[in-house]
Length: 104
Ligand SMILES: [Ca+2]
Ligand SMILES: [Ca+2]
Image 1 (cartoon, rainbow, N blue to C red):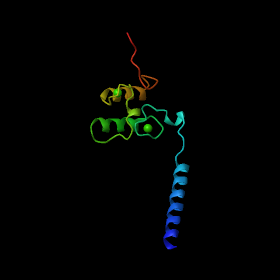
Image 2: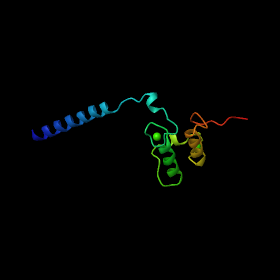
Image 3: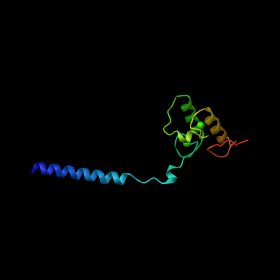
Image 4: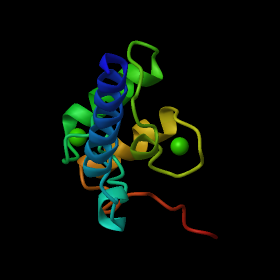
């Protein structure tokens, strides 16, 4: 009888865990997965803090948790070119990110 109660309690705990896990997993909308290019530190804004975070990452001082917002020219490489583009965006030399080179 005691074993039966333990098995029942274990099954109930497992069932509760599955229900709780199901409640925690929310579908992600397209808006939530949209990339805010230039938002290197992920705080929802593009500003000088992102420039500093990108400089630290390029110089190996910090590791980025999400590389996509830092790749502002979308060439799959995070380097000084991305830093220069982010700087240009911050001083309004360019007005949008990601930056696309104009074809000649
Ligand atoms: Ca930011
Ligand atoms: Ca890049």
